[in-house]
View 1 (cartoon, rainbow, N blue to C red):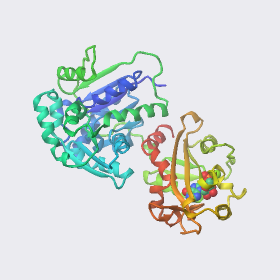
View 2 (tube, protein in one colour; view 1 turned 120 degrees about the vertical axis):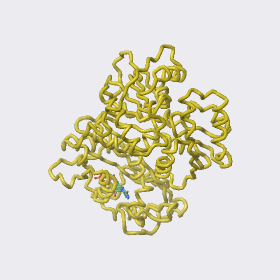
View 3 (cartoon, rainbow, N blue to C red; view 1 turned 90 degrees about the vertical axis):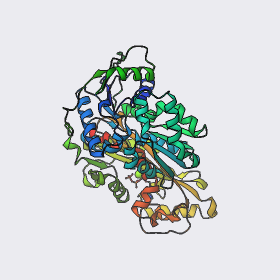
View 4 (cartoon, helix red, strand yellow; view 1 turned 45 degrees about the vertical axis):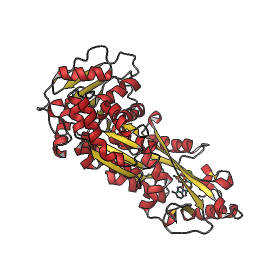
Length: 484
Ligand SMILES: O=P(O)(O)OP(=O)(O)OP(=O)(O)OC[C@H]1O[C@@H](n2cnc3c(O)ncnc32)[C@H](O)[C@@H]1O
Ligand SMILES: [Mg+2]
């Protein structure tokens, strides 16, 4: 439980579109908002300058003792999110990944449009985030630089706005996009105009609103939600004119009480990291396994982020935890919680298994000991082949599943739990020499290879464990830094 406010920063009033959603989804939370109206727009500025301005905003809000930071500005997220995340010991959330996720969920045709400021478009941040998840997705980006000033000058409902929106979006009308990301938190204020031009068949994605889902999830993960029952407070600051901020903000948030935004000057704030957490670098995480194949895969994922990966092989005296659960999650939790307690280190445990449709989901959680105790890959594979001997090729469908649990010492309630799957076919003849376990028999039609014929990178792109890791992608680093 934590009663401190959540901090929101933006170049102007646009970030209030995120606050609006937060007031709706998280009514018990207090907030502090800072809009840098004196220096907007951020869109045309060089990335280094956006970083410096963003740090000034962040350093101002840190003095308000925020428990979490939302960079409610796409341009600042694109330019500064990784930098700020790496230097703060509170969770930091940007708007680009949540927006990208929602767009991928919404699209049917696989063609997504992105409108954003020049800075965001130039950074390629959306393209990168979307392609990381869906490499083949079709994307069309368009800079809409005039939209921010329309909103900031309170022209969003004027005939000029209607014309500018129609003119700007013209190039998108010849594309067959079915989903359009509003890649700037100012744009939802123009939503009716944008929808009108694009037509009802196009789904508009409000990245800011999507971000609040992540905020809500992280409050739970880190046990930071305010359940004190106290009335929440909301403070608004602007580097520009408070009267203008109030006028726009009160209308947008549909407030009945005055907003009373305060003017601040943040130019004296440091334009670089103040609250560094050097110990965040060089963190250690223990993989709760002795399976060298698995350990190698986790190393590929964590080491590039500067994390030292150890495994049970490095702690020979730690007692073995038996897997006595009836589900993948129970087993993974048992291992993660117990080893984290014994080793007093953060631990990642996974439980994986192969579920073959023709065998009613067997061997499932018994995959490691399918052929009896002893964890012998060759014996397990031999038994699998025998069991499937009479099953025709097309009916040998199977799913590989992983449940991953990240645990910190003595806090099982804060475990991060995610799942990942991959579908494939069990071949009759083993192929390939890489990978481990059932890999030589697990054929992935999309790549035309068994998992043992893939490079580590290829396997990670499609595998059950890779997919589970991607579900952790936005949160594990912050989690580790906050709790490790
Ligand atoms: O010490 P732990 O981590 O429990 O190691 P384990 O080998 O028992 O691991 P699991 O219970 O998670 O795995 C069940 C079985 O599935 C196999 N397996 C797990 N991940 C695999 C992968 O990515 N590719 C092929 N086989 C895999 C593994 O070899 C086991 O035989
Ligand atoms: Mg096991």
